[in-house]
Amino acid sequence: MLVVQKFGGSSLATLERIRHCAQRCVAVARDRDGDRVVVVVSAMSGETNRLIGVANALVQPEAHEVHRGPYVPSAVRTPEHERELDQLMATGEIVSAALLAMAIQGAGGRSLSLVGRQLGMQTDRSFGRAKILGVDTARILAELDAGSIVVCAGFQGTDAHGDTTTLGRGGSDTSAVALAAALGADVCEILTDVDGVYTTDPRVVATARKIERLSYEEMLELAGQGAKVLQIRSVELAMRYGVHIHVRTSLDDRPGTMIVPEEPAMESILVSGVALERNEAKVTLLGVPDVPGVVATIFAAMAALDIIVDMIIQNAGADGRADVTFTVPEGELDRATAALATVQFGERPPTITSDREICKISIVGLGMRTHAGVAAKAFGLLAAEGINVQMVSTSEIKISVVVHERYGELALRALHDGFGLATAAAPAV
Ligand code: ASP
Ligand code: MG
Image (cartoon, rainbow, N blue to C red; front, side, top):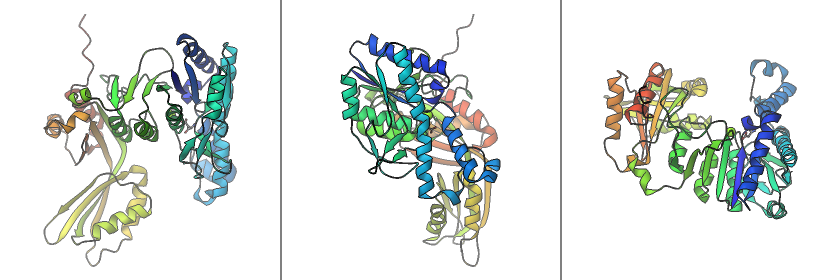
């Protein structure tokens, strides 16, 4: 059996935790006799942000004062700068890989670490968001044959010139799945600081419970809706290659959540998870000329700014005019409304308003494909709490609603418990 184990940054945050991970790797290799283990690591938590902060402070000290965190002024986003930023960011994972390999050696295992180029992770040259072109597994296989636990630096690859690239924030999940696919691993374990994927955020809804098995499609919908357990790209990759992902805690041996190809039994569960996305804002244009091409102009203006539009509603009104409402990420609202103000609508321009005080709640489940009445039930549950629904959108396995921000958590709880996702009540004592 071949296992890929990915340790996230929080599992590697201190030397003590690194030692703990090392013991775990050695135990897996020893207990499951003959198992071969490939480990993928993230940078120690906070390290990637720290490196980006240092780069920002260097190139534009004033901007750094104002904007902390992963902000790079566009003036310095040259290809040359991006190349160096990747070179810099990749060091975070290289450090944790080397430390973990040393710790495994210290725990009595045989181990060596490999950086992106050594582990054969071949990518294109899009610095900061490189695409994986292929994995040349020869070196990893040779080291496994020699009896080593191979520790791979995640998040990084190498392009045709041998230059270091990175796969985008959170990219070590994608490294792990790509390696699991290329090596034909039996499972790709994502070891993290949560013990699995939950029916909703347990910090918000106390009755949330761990999901045992989830299909790729459901995970993609939940991840896209604000359940940030895994980089979305890694789930897409796993779906394409049929890699079984096991999300579990690095602290103990409890099983977590398996993310696997769809199984017939999954359709009997109506709703598997509910997610809340707070970072949404709404733009409304009242009285848009209802003629071909106008809506295209509005969304072309958004696309030109790379603004991702989520839900869209258009209602044809009287007198040849229509109302258009759509949502954008809250951080893009100002840019969106500024751009709309410059669009030429002719003699009677629409009235443009916006609203930041909204949030989106999505319910996801494969069972929706084969069961009617899910939307009706959701609206009923919200109405019972006196919550007004402002917008709705649906896909085959998802219903999303926009409500006032003030009711977000209440709505989440009502839908979660109303669709029977709550843990069984604790027995009375
Ligand atoms: N260290 C990288 C990041 O913070 C990659 C990862 O952790 O997956 O984005
Ligand atoms: Mg992560």
